[in-house]
Length: 162
Image (cartoon, rainbow, N blue to C red; front, top):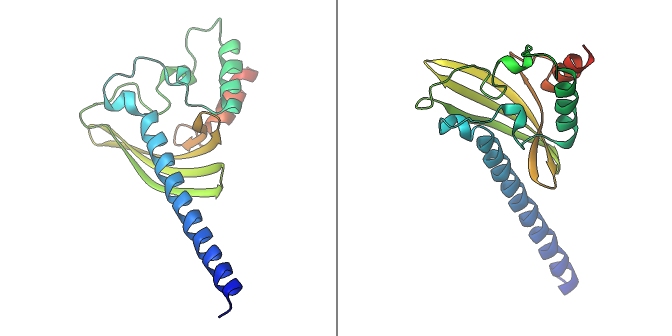
């Protein structure tokens, strides 16, 4: 084999290894980000409302602000009556769990994550999270679940229009 061909093959193989290594790194950082979203529930220290947490994408954070502005004179609405991430009002921190079931990356900056949340007392919910990579890392862009069948963003937009 000619030296240039060997160099080309070696470069292709190294690029493939780098790409698969980057994919593994992304998978790990996505999983770590998702688990960190629920840290307050696990530690029984969910002292701030889910919508106040700095975990949302720029677009979702703007929708949250629009919803908050629309609800400024209202004491509680449907969205503020429960924790979005746990989909509950109460949970058992000793049994609370987050299981990342799958991670799918559409491209380098977008991922879909299927998650099972155990709230305690045998209660579980399934969620599908849409994440986007921004300057601060992997941010929660949207969530679909029993509480948000059309997505969190759609619920926020609808509530802000009221």
